[in-house]
Amino acid sequence: MYKWIFLVALVMLAGCAQTKFNIQERDDGLIPSYDDSQHYFIYGIGQQKNLDPAEICGGANKVARVETQTTFLNGFLGVITFGIYTPQQARIYCSK
Image 1 (cartoon, rainbow, N blue to C red):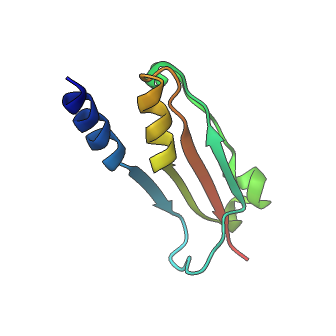
Image 2: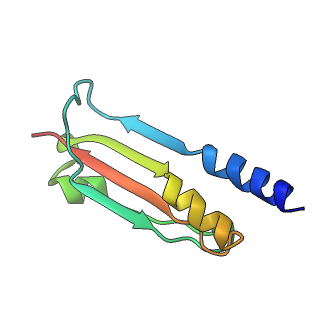
């Protein structure tokens, strides 16, 4: 029984996901202007978080990239809490 639980947890942790939206073509070497964990509960069902990248970067023309990511730690927290707490990273990159 413990082998199956371990196998399922390992597969869930290995499946880190990342979504990137590149607004500007050149975004090499950027560091995030905003990097924070978004908190969701019960797998995030029916929940949403809203950020305004234009406000964070000081204008819509300064937004270079927006991304969300489920990191190893986020996946681990979701597994050990059985999906009760499922965080996700949000990052916003601004052009210089």
